[in-house]
Length: 190
Image (tube, rainbow, N blue to C red; front, top):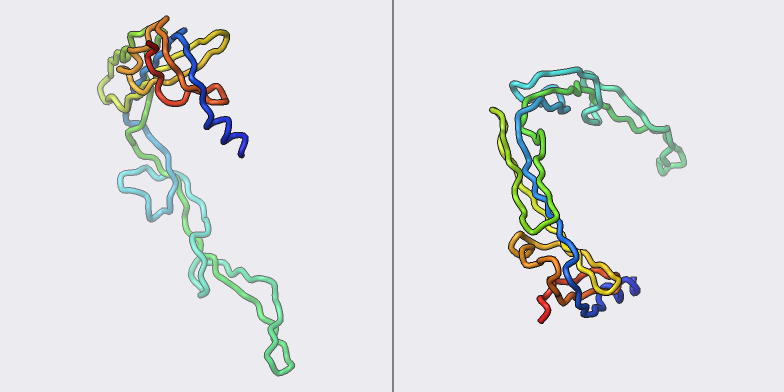
């Protein structure tokens, strides 16, 4: 642990130039599709299509109940305090109920449109959505590769505005820890 702490907290300043850039942007495509779930028979939502069911223990209790199995542990003796021991056995009732699968239409991710490149011009993928589908969450990732002498360092820019600063060949001051990982945001070299 001490070695890891020392290596990750000690940093060196390194001058490096941008060797390459990569970007990827994605958009989830949402649509309604049948999705299968499981639940107790009395908890299946209205409008869902009920599938197969089987009996399963829903709860245990100390009193007898309809559709319950009596399950008892190993008998043991309890000292009565008067020199006589009494044989007792703990029992419980496992109450069974119908556990079923059901299907209903839900909005889910049906596809993901992706655009990527290794230039400084990130763009969103073009969507041509059919009726019944819509755009979901967007995600973007920007990677920069720096080189210094014979070493390479990877860095992930926070957003497109930061990414735009890292033009191929530009020089930057990096704080690099003992594991050759960039710590913090690079600073433009003067």
